[in-house]
Length: 82
Image: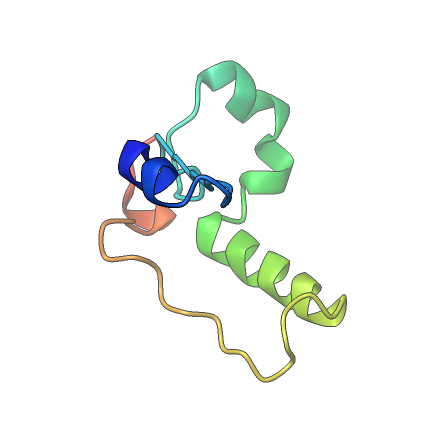
């Protein structure tokens, strides 16, 4: 950043810093699970498919886009313990 600012002081600097991977399936505390149990009973893959379809219907995602496979490190909910 210092080098960029020194070489091009007239240009703004854009910095994107992400400390977490927020869009992966995570284990949640029991009180959160209980609060949203009905919504999440169908499982992460089904919810992901529903949300993807809704975004396509809203025009946020182009209609011809295919849902990519789950990331290799993200196990299916069926394989997780309670």
